[in-house]
Image (cartoon, rainbow, N blue to C red; front, side, top):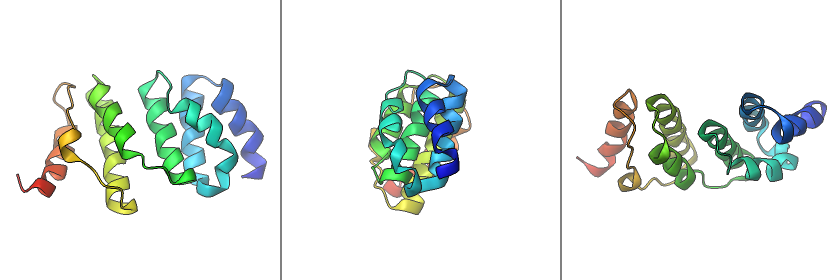
Length: 130
């Protein structure tokens, strides 16, 4: 991480949307080793680009142990893109199934046009025995 830290910090703070997106993914990969990026990740968790925001929230969960599900659900509910919703709900499933974060399934109110994400919501609905 030390070798990449300066470049990552620069990308998180001043990069294009895609550079920020991928820098968040790299921080996720480093996990707790990327603690020095928490401040920049917190700022990006409010970014206007929903995919940058999603990856920042994901990184904060893996780097800092923050519960990502409330913010990920908000992103899924806010997006009008079926692809963005699918990517976000895949992250929700990952954190719920592999990191033990609790999902309030009833909080999912996705408004995006129909897409593959419907299979993900069906998967979550199994918890409600619907």
